[in-house]
Amino acid sequence: MASETVKIYAWDQNDDALVGVLVRVFDSTGTTFIAQNTTALVGSEAIAEFTLDGDDPPIEYTLRLSKTGVAFDGALGDSYKTPQLIEVWSPAASSPTGTNDFDVNGETFTLPVATDSRLCRASGFFKDATGRALESLDITLINDFKPAVVDGYGVLGSKVELRTDEDGYVEVDLYRGGEYRAMVQSIQAAEEDPTGAIVFDRELVVPDRASVNIVDLLFPVVSEITWDPVSIDVGDTEEVVPVVTCSDFRTLEGTACEDVLYEMADTDIATVSVAADVLVITGISSGTTELTATRLDQTVVAIPAVDIVGSPLSITVA
Image (cartoon, rainbow, N blue to C red; front, side, top):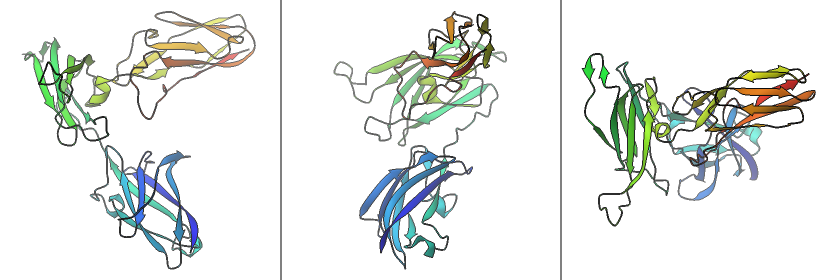
């Protein structure tokens, strides 16, 4: 018996790397915990690595897999279920594959789509502060009557009442382009309000899509910026109009300078002037630098943290 390196490769139903899967290792009976790790991206693969005892004949271990929004129920085959057994050989070359590498699979949650082309289905999951599914969370959507008329029908009714199920899940169909005000209540009731206190009140804009994550509607952040690389001469200027998109699929106006901070990495090479509708890049000296866009609003904290796609912008001054 000797210690061997064991690699667990996680994939989804589309054969894409499945990052963030918690892999826990137990003995063959599934009762004694040994180790745990989380799959991380290595190149194009999601891997959790362990050092476990192996032998010939092999030693059996039980794997238990979990990740929010991913099913390991075996509905798509044995490799999709948890728990599952693996055999660790020492030396690894004695194993049928010549390695102690194992593939596991999970079925990722696919957002359900609205069947009416005028509607967008908003759906998603909620958890409490301890990581458990948040059941019976009340969400009230107030219709702002935008739109007020769709295909000749009046859109009336002032409220849409939602409540999460035992899995913390909720879904609702809303008009595309519609504007609603969301009031979300806490499970912890306030002393003066035994029915539960309103914890926040937000304006929602529904995207022109068949589906959207309701969490992105409630907590939108700047997610992507599209712009072309800049190549200018010393002393010249160039105007850049970025296209700034949020996680709720809204496109913000102009440079979105109230939501985005633009900073030049090396101001000895180039500078940036920010206006409401355009960025002006000025070449100072020959070289290359980068223009970085970061979120001004840091109140929405996401784990894992995600940078703005498309930032930074390459700047070349000749």
